[in-house]
Length: 107
Image (cartoon, rainbow, N blue to C red; front, side):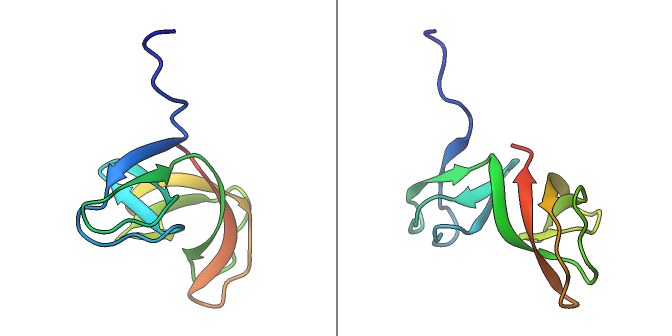
């Protein structure tokens, strides 16, 4: 198909304001994902926008499977603020601040 560009599993973006390390949570406009590679300011890098990731989610209490996940102030949270970016695939207990869980990005 001549108009096919990509699967959409990742997006190429520019590290505009700060250096980026592989695995960093990244938000560029409405694109949310995890950096696939490192990049310096102004450098082009890939952001993986689909899949399941092992991450910390801000939550004072345990996070259950199926809970919605939002991005707010550059961090993932279970508080219904910011933009919904995914859902918890594997829940986890909280240390009173955050819980390590598996999150599926909505892509």
